[in-house]
Image 1: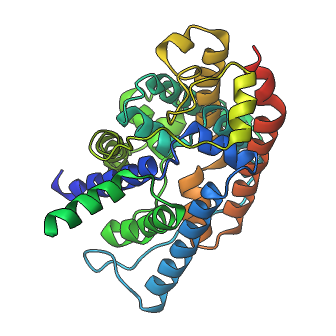
Image 2: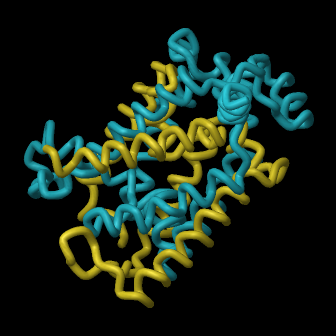
Length: 137
Length: 195
């Protein structure tokens, strides 16, 4: 349990940022998909830029994980699900105005009805698990 | 003097944070999780974890040792708590600012609540009892869960972590997310909102 406390704190900071930057707002997502605001593009773009530089620094200086373990970055393999599933998620993102992280933050911020959206997302995950073998990958 | 500075910081924290503050903080989550314990940022997999922990049934996709990845359940619990802190201790006292053209378009669909992060017209317990609200929350949520798992990740796992580690399949996924979102928001959502 004690070893997990740091992830709770990191998640908490992440959640505060999601709410304070209004990324959890349905309106910001609508503005993004209608090209009415730069905000979301700025957030995602600068997050990726900082991420790329950080990962490069980790590799360049062989920075180790806590405990001295070498940092592992698993390679993604391409499959058709990234296209089909990606488009379906895009539909859901535009409707709910939220991806999975913001759903948790919205509930925390007091939008209690979002537990229904979250339950819908859990149901969707479950149905994917059931149909997995039959879907093109 | 120091009290004045304190008030200044508190007032600043309560304002909406600009993209150039939020984006880098989100980006730093990638190295933070790697250094803390070789963990890859990814939130949608927590949904699979919840099922594996609570009701795996006979579905092989949910039969794995979820306790090995329990960290992400702590991470999403943290997000929930952070949402509470941000809304209750650092809440913005002013109404949300929304693009005027979007406000006008949404007024046309009867969406009047433009001052909150989520419009109560569409996302509330009362709205859940309407066809429109049910589609927005239940169907929308289903697509988020099904789509992210099928794609193998969401905005955090593919767009942020995947692109940060220069993985081209994550770029494909991110383009698919955006394509689906543009299509839905501009061509389909207006019809749903007219219901």
